[in-house]
Every structure is written in structure tokens, then in C-alpha cells.
Image 1: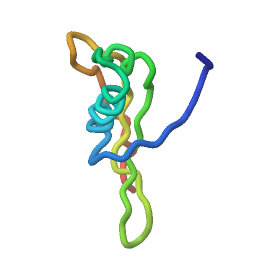
Image 2: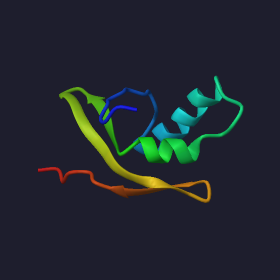
Image 3: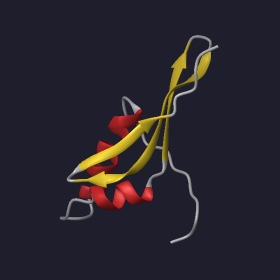
Length: 80
């Protein structure tokens, strides 16, 4: 593949975006792909629409997938 990339996925939260990616991959592949997703995705930014405009709700660093569970850490900026 090529280094770098960006995509949008509609989901309810940053963490559920990983599950949504699994669902989309399952539409074209019989094999589950959490390991591949965990390696391909580095950062997830969840954006929420509010009356004042769009805001960053969650930011997750994705470190990979181990035993079927995504390894993530929060990188959500402080509100201020």
C-alpha cells in the first residue's frame, strides 16, 4: 500500500468506527479482518454536529488488535 490516507465512516463513536469498518469489510470478505484493520488504522477522530457547529468528540490512537480486541488509547484534546 501507500503511506498515509484518510477516510470517513459513519458511526456513533470513535470506538464503534472500528466495528463499522469490520461490517463493511464483511460485505466483501468471508474472513474477519480485525488484525488488518488494527494495523491499517492509526487514528480515529469522531466529530459531532452541535448547534454551534462541528466539534471533536473523541480521538483514539489505534495500536493494533490482540486476541480479537482493538488496542486503543485516548488522544481526545481537553476542552478549553
